Length: 237
Ligand code: ADP
Ligand code: MG
Image (cartoon, rainbow, N blue to C red; front, side, top):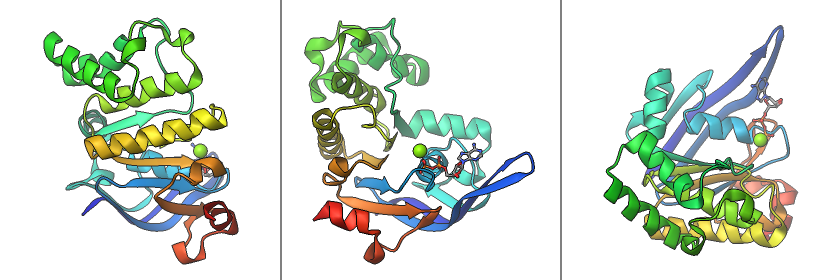
């Protein structure tokens, strides 16, 4: 079943007199519990696409459905509420709070968004830290962790609210090759465990090898999978 449906979506940015069309008439369907990789060179529209699905911005044209909700019709407040209830985010630069421990970083969305009781919070945080293999690091601060470990914490933080959909914009860009592959494998394991749908972008060939479903963008257009750019086909060999 489709969790995300993108119908004839275009996005044009207006900066002063200059217009840039970052997405041209994109139609795409993403299944529930799938593990989706968006690829394409810099400037091809990956971040724009993730921002639209992630309700951080609105399309200029077209419709976007996430579950039963038509999210392009949401106002700013509805988008924020929907992000909190249904979506999780993982960032390239980890975006952890340096003054909070691993445990506290993961607990943060439960305090801010879900308003859960202390005992329920504890149960949820410990469970997800165990799932990402970071339980033994729960009292460490981000500066005491490696890049790969920080991104594990960020994965736990994205999942702790049990979102339907997690979005990650180049989550491995700041990691060495081995840690990058490990983080992608962790995300896939989390999809298996929690049935969370993941959509993440990358232009890292090593990461593409771990992909299940690849959608390629070029100049804001989605390429037909049968005519994927040579860089994807070569990397998948
Ligand atoms: P990618 O993530 O694949 O590098 P982006 O979605 O960031 O691609 O960008 C696609 C195009 O849209 C680029 O030409 C970029 O310069 C432009 N763009 C992205 N965000 C903005 C913005 N906020 N204002 C104006 N132009 C933007
Ligand atoms: Mg980008």
